Length: 384
Image (cartoon, rainbow, N blue to C red; front, side, top):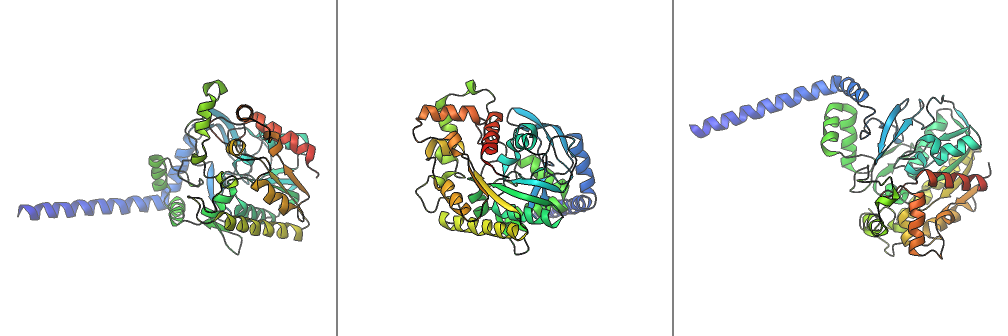
């Protein structure tokens, strides 16, 4: 009798939990977006909060949210102002949208300019010093499949570009291999089931999505095991010594850039072989070239190194060779920014000096000085 009572109590408890869950999900499905949007608006300038700055896109996977003005976007110890236009393009605050541009720049977080206000990013500097007709389409964790998808989407929405330049990042290879699937209609979807489930919850159950996000601190745009925001970025180079930098930029912790200097044909953490990944990237970039050429839009490509590349690779490496060769028959310009940061004769001390000068320490991205160097080199070499 005692066991039966316990069993009945347990069943009632499960029934209450089940009914409560159904009720919560029903309210979430019907009204969750309204509640979450109000909550986000109230904390939008919290420096650690990134949730609503980056949103799902039904065609090209993800983008910066449109029409935002976040005065305290956090990146490491720094805060900076982040503004977008109605299409989710990062710009100087107050910039009005338009649809006709001389140049479209696309790439990943380096082109977006993580940790840097638009005016100090290389895209922003180029914009102000050359022509105001520049569209910055770059967003964190983009790669060739999304480059194709986003360019196709924008052009089919009536955008006019005379010239497109793609800043191909060394991490684009693993993002394409591990994260994205490009469909014949040009849409990009997550390759992994877990990521597709995340997006389903995000789309239909915003309160549950918000709860999971707050508890896990996860980020759906990052490939690999680490969360989106680095654990520590040093604002003062005196805070970290060379030995500490060596640990921060150790080969083993940065598999996203390892393919350029690894001797392995299949690196642990990559879904398939490096050669296969390169061939897949080249096919996608050929699709971009053909799509743009059909519309008489010029294509250019630019490349640049990570701190790990500087420490463990050579200036004329696999990454440079692939895109230089690709550009021989296709590109108006091939811009190699590696010589700005790398020289065959550099010793280890020189390499650390370069990293300290041009990169956000503890992170892979350029600081304001690095962005300025890229912009100046670009303006010397690029022909519109």
